[in-house]
Amino acid sequence: MKDGKNGTGSGKFVGFCIDLLRMVSQMAGFQYTIELVPDGKYGVYDPETGEWNGMVRQLMDK
Image (cartoon, rainbow, N blue to C red; front, side):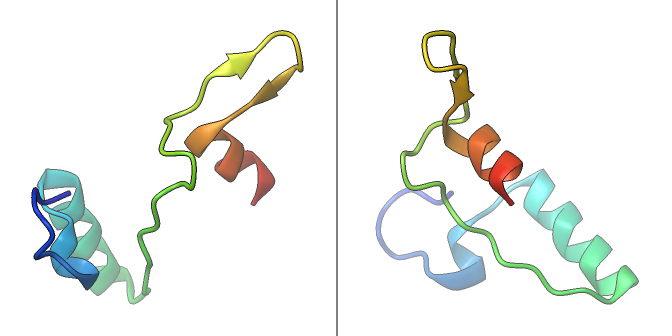
């Protein structure tokens, strides 16, 4: 993600993975949306609740 507040839409994210995603989507003919997870975490397992949070939880739920 770009530093600062100027980035919006697809210009908000930069880097190799973003470039790769853009190229693959053009070649394969699909569209995508990048969304940040609400809690801002990658994903940590909580042994007390037996659940994950963050990005891992988002992937499991959808």
